[in-house]
Structures are given as structure tokens and as C-alpha cells.
Image (cartoon, rainbow, N blue to C red):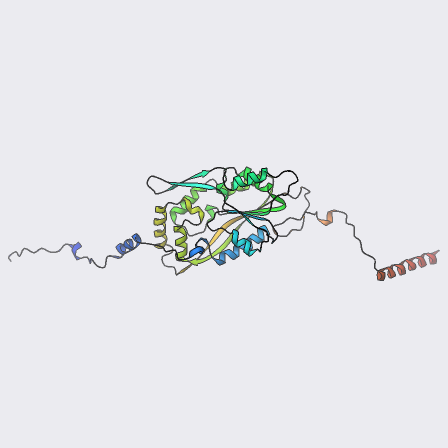
Amino acid sequence: MAATGRHEPAARDLLPRYPQPFSVISEHWQDQLHVHDNTGDDLFSFGPVYDENMFKLIHKHLELDTHDRFAYVGASKGSYAAKIKEKFCLLQPIVEIYPGTILYEETPNQRRMIPFKVDQVGAEQYFRELSEGLTEGKEPPFDKIILHGAFEYFSSPKTTFAHIMRTLTKHGKLLILHRPAPMSTLPFFTEANKRFVEEDSNDPYLKILRSLQSQRVDVKWDIEVLPIVMPKVKWLAMLNKKFPPQMEIISNFEILTGVRELTEGMLKYQGEMVEFFDRLMFIAVSLPYGTGGYPSIQRHGSSETKPYPGLVDLKYSLEITPDIQKHIRDIQNNKKFKQNSIF
């Protein structure tokens, strides 16, 4: 047969050019992935279900009353200051304090963020100056204080806690909210979880407890679980905005690849809403009520100042009304009559 000058097509030429294979379509879509923030001011909130459980736990551990003088120490992102004031109907103006300053600098390859803590600013400076200004006989300014994710900003925790406790009244209370990285159940991507555990490798929650115990205060702590229900796109938008605040140590490149991991992994086949849980440490701190060592009946989260009644002599008194006085006279007369009858 004579040659015609034509050749058989290569195998790659037989592959369809349009549409592209599924893997290429996925990568092409991911390069153009944009998570739109349509949640407005509600972006830095875990939702009403989470908030209601948070308020219940604050009431359980802090026992915040409407007349209490209250201070809130926490980041502006996701601040609970205004919500607490409204929920607990606080009559006194609240004091909202910024916890401190941590500067973040990207590495040369822009793949990681390196934190640099600025010492003695924010809450540390505020409570130091306030504590030093309390002269003898001057009443402390606060009844209740909340530290929400603020411990990592303290360069001198023991000294700062000493200043904070000086600003509390005798029966005041401090509540510390802390999210330990090893116990976290939030749906972060792999690199974020790895970085959080690295930053948390020195067990800061143990540092919190030891720093408090060094001040000889009463400390009680619990691990609480709070449910979260929110749209999937909102969670991704929160991560893009570096919320929760611990996300500040994650670079933009890590967030981009992390969101891709979530959308192609655990969040790929879920519906519009996602449900998960948050685990927080609630650490309640109060000044010691005494060293008597008596057992007592206690309300949850508070100590009874009086000793157990079975261990002391009690004196009872009863007001004698005219009706009771009549019976007393009858008893006295009967007693005299019996004595006379015997003799």
C-alpha cells in the first residue's frame, strides 16, 4: 500500500479537551475560591446557641449580679462585653480592657507568622497602675472580672494576677476562659491544629493554675463543652478573617491552603449548616475566706463564710407573745402545785 503521509494520533490527543478532567476542574475552581462574608457584624460570633450556653456557664461559675461592678478583658474580635451587660442587666457601667499587644511578622517565604509579644501594655499596665493606686482603706473598684483568651498576652502572669486580685472586693471573683489547644474540637485545618499545639506545648493552662496558686487564692476549674450551629460558609469566612483570635498566628497562605483542605475534606459533603463543639476551661478564682477548715454547705461556685452549725454552740431565742405567756403561766402554776403536793 502506498504511503499517504498521514500518521496515527497519539494517545494524549484522544483525551477530551473540554470539559477538563474532574481533578483539573477541582484545582481550577480552588484557585478562584472566594468565601464571601455576608454575615455583617455577626461574623465574630459562634451563634445564638453558643451564646446562650456561654451565659449559663458564666452565671454558674461567676454568679454575676445586676449590681456588680464588672470588668471584661478580651480581644475586640468576638467580645462579650456588650452582650454580658445586656443579658445580665448590669446597672453599673462596665469596664472593657484590651488584653495586650502581640505583633506578627511573616517569614521571608510568607508561609508562617512569627509572634512578638509587647511587654507591660494593655491589661498588665492597667491593673498594675490601678493596684498601685489603691491606698489603705480605699475600696477596690470591681466585684467581678472576666479574662477571655487574655492569658497569652501576659508577660508576668504571677505579678499580673496579684494586681488583678487586689482590684477585687473581699467577696469578688475572677473568671478565666481559656481554650487549650490539645483539647480543642473546633474544625480547624491540619496546619492550624499543628501550629496551635506547638504554641501550646508548654501547657499554658498549667501555668495559669500555678500562677494563681502562687497567690494563695481559691481556684476551681472545669472543662465545659459548648455546642455550635452555624452555616458552613460562615465558619470559612471566620477563618479567613483570622477568628478565633488564636488564628492570628496563621499566615494568609496557610489559611488559603487550609480552607481548600476543609472544602475538599471534612466540609465537602455536608449541608449548608454544620454542627460542632467548643471546649473551654472555666477557671473561677476568689480570695480565700479563711483557714478555719470547717466543712460547709455551699451554693455551686461560692463558699459559705460561716462554719458548719454542728461544730459550735448555738443560742436560740423566741419572742414571747401574750398567747405564749398564758401557757407559760399555766405551766409554772402546775409545777408549783405538784411540788406542794409532794411535800
